[in-house]
Length: 433
Image 1 (tube, rainbow, N blue to C red):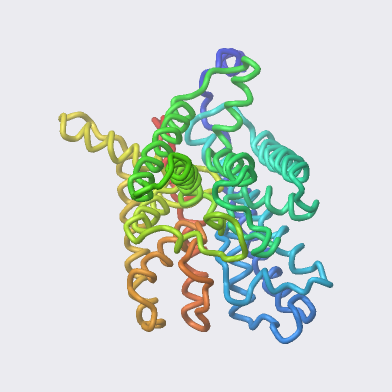
Image 2 (cartoon, helix red, strand yellow; image 1 turned 45 degrees about the vertical axis):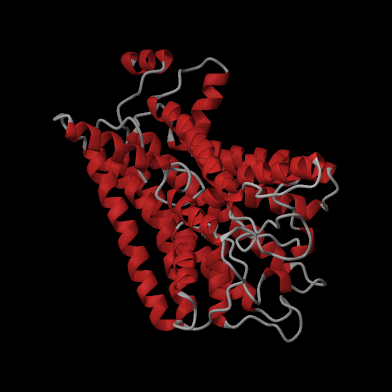
């Protein structure tokens, strides 16, 4: 007991405590999460939720429920923009699914993360931190958006979606902010970055701010990778979006470069994490992907694959996984011992690629009329829980069930990898998955 107290005071990691209890809690939360998806489907299928004549079929209701709970946020041909304006049930269901999905990922990922890293946080502290972070993010985001003129409910829903890295917006396409607007770059995308850092990093940042403990290697690496990935992503996109000219006036050139820099900055975050259906310059069209040239769209595929950080609300392979691949490969080439975390990272990358390839082949079979490049974009977006697509999703039947399954795998598989790491590896310094 004395040694544990001394370690906690000095900011050193403590031995892993009660892994079976955390696993049981996570399994229980998984059951609640799946029940939430089922109840969401039932609620969205009810009469009156949609405008008359646009009621959701069972496959669309299931897809929309999974889409919101997995924090994807795909725009669909008949979806959240077709909710009955005289009935707030649909918007309320989307908000509850978003909140439930965010808290599920934060708590389960946090429980696994603190165990894998041997951080001195109890299960109660993890749950409390998840609830507190969610509440503070929504309050801060909503206050900023309301001050900017957004309606109250829309401000809350957009803030919840941003922190949860979900592109599901119930405000309607006319109120979707422009990619380079202050709402997008000053409120929504910063919230998405914080949500994508992961609960262990947020908890350590809070303690470090009050001098309670130093940041662990995982938190330092995660913050560094977040900044580096943002800069590299922005640079790649800026190369694709650079103004070509010729310009008649310096003012015109300045405006073109200003848009290119702002769009590259916003897309560098949005494509990896949030997946908001931002418009390039405002208006009613949902055309975030189509506003980019073809080469930039393939850059978006790469960014969606990478994702954000482990134990956060974003999807994808995660930057921490790529860190282990790079450092593990370097160790192997230098003849050093390769860590078990490197092996787990390699398995996760292989699993991600396998799911993507199988999903693409199956979707090609069920919806062969769609171009191959758009199917690739759609599968990667679903697997990484981003929710971006060239057009609103109009797939029905087996293809829609397949996309829902891919989204669910993309949300649950990284959490399973985290728990695999926590239960089998004793020398973890940076998380995987």
